[in-house]
Length: 129
Image 1 (cartoon, rainbow, N blue to C red):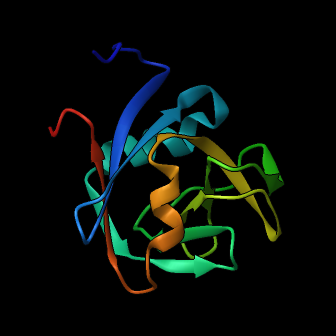
Image 2: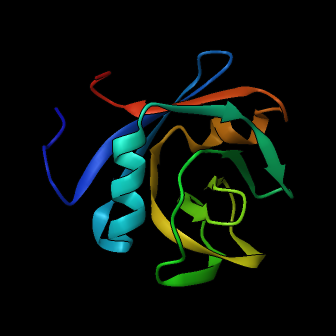
């Protein structure tokens, strides 16, 4: 059973072949960006590859950088303001652009490495509402 919290919330990232990846956004990591994403849910877009370490999709979220980073660990979720991209890292990576860490993948990370470029991704609340 999910614990209800105002500081973090559970999401589902669903692939076009109905694979489910569980995620958690954490408000304390970047309050403005996480709040904007939460209010915009559900979000969907086409997958793009970020090297061999992450996938991302473009969103309509407009937010700046909060606590910028360019080194990410396996399971991190980040937001890149340039392009309004939500990125899901399935291996450790150092990227060329600074991003905002917004959360973690909590289950199903192995499913990301087989997502093809162009596949549809949907991000929505775990409760389905």
